[in-house]
Image 1: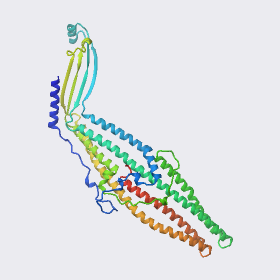
Image 2: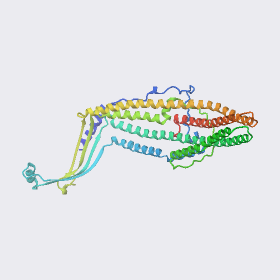
Image 3: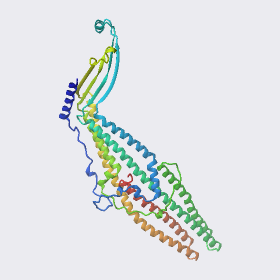
Length: 472
């Protein structure tokens, strides 16, 4: 029996060696999917990028670091992604056993009572003088499929790519969470700044209203002046509860991101104290595939699609399977384990070619090819989106800085205009409307300046995320 097994295994290895070949050719990620440089960026071959910086070093505000730490540790979406990685790990581990023979142990017992008038019954009675026969077997069965066409190899490749893809999905999710936490925190600081501006303006309106009332008592203005001043004061007062509402909503949103119930968030720094970084290191577009998780995930999806094409193509070809059984067998329990008389063994090997289900297998192969073509297009689209997001962030960083320069000058001018208007109004050289208009313009400009600062900080964060930063 041992010689028979050796011959069949040798035959299988010989067949595998002779006809083993790669039945499908993998498609590589298209190199022309990347531009040479980002728009709004100077031409450079420097491959260094701010995306290589760990988020704890990119964000220097301790409040943001504390919030992001909490989000990375407690965010429910990230924890779900961790479980998906665990599941993919199990699948990949299981795929490694594809080349290992399947071995099963068995114990069987049966009894047969043939008819007395049947051929079996007559022979049974003559042979052993009994009307029934018992049969007892115990042993092991083995089944093994030779990986002639690389089917099992592709299954392992696909499972491994799927495992890596699940890790990239988690990284992409973390980059978004890190960016969203920082955006939320900067928005919170902007709302705080705008709340301070609204309160200061309300105090200024109070002072102006008091002056106008004194002018009214002196008969220098009409009640219309008091009414318009009161209306502008109420306009500033209305902003305060609106901003307080938005602050609470933003704090609640940050609580969800950090995996906690709604609560206030600590702020130990003011918006005006944060320096807007000048992030010039952006690298080259082709590096996005290694830095940006969603682009890497799209590349891995193509590898999974390549593996599926190989698997479905291999199903169209003959499969070489070897089976074997061995153990002890007897129709009497007393002789069941009488060695070697009760020993038995069978070995078989053969090629199986699908016939009637060939059309179904061909359809599955065609679908796999189409899915691979989709994966190529999805990869190109992921690169387009990534490059576009980087270009958007670059132009925002540049143009917001210019806007801030002009707006600062505008605020400075309006602050001086307020002083002049108040002085002229007190001396009867300016109308009250000029004072109220100057105050309204200053309020709007100061609110816009706080928003511009928030937009600049957010644009830097967006550039960092667009380049693939935030998951390290």
